[in-house]
Image (cartoon, rainbow, N blue to C red; front, side, top):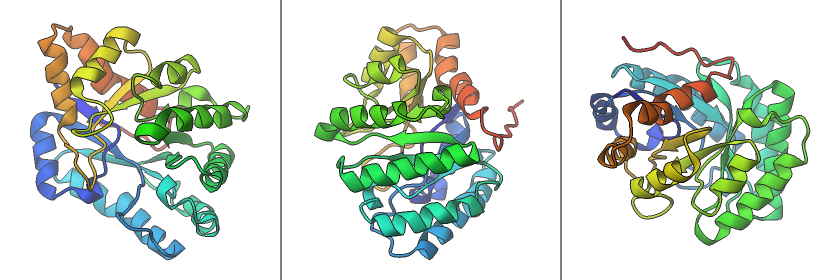
Length: 270
């Protein structure tokens, strides 16, 4: 079965991972901007990173028949530095018309601080002024529910936002309902030591159905598995779910969400 990974950080993965993903049926992926493992010190550091996302990674992926798309932002872990964040946000429009750039992300909260909220709102303002889609990071572990509520409140206060063009990622059992009920897309992230497992994600599909639901690996520098989406496919098959339902979640839903971006040009595999 062909599938799309809507959230994976390939700058942290080896080229062998691209080959493995291709063998497993991955035909496209999207890579949100994220933390580099350390806090970058200048806007030029982010400019170089955006060049890597929009140029080098797309070429590396294409060598294995995988289409690479990306999102741009300064992530929540570095958003405590408001001065630097504003410099990065002002620079982002240089790249918004690059091939494969889907929008602003992954923005959100990390520790639910005032500065993180300020930078989140200024990213949202940029996205609205430039007509971009938005991909949102919700906090980890004990900060997740409070951070998700804060994010939904901030989004709900901006009447310019088209909710079907926003993906709220890393939902879990205690946050998925308010995200879906508010009209946003919800992303389930499969991690080996936190967030979701394939079984928990399958449970949520059985409870809430496939509408506006995505599943991703968010493979990055830490403990993560780039082939987590195929693990979800296997779990759904093990439970006896129809292939059409599985395909909708791992292939058709990403196409529907990404297809709202002017830079999403997808070549369907033969």
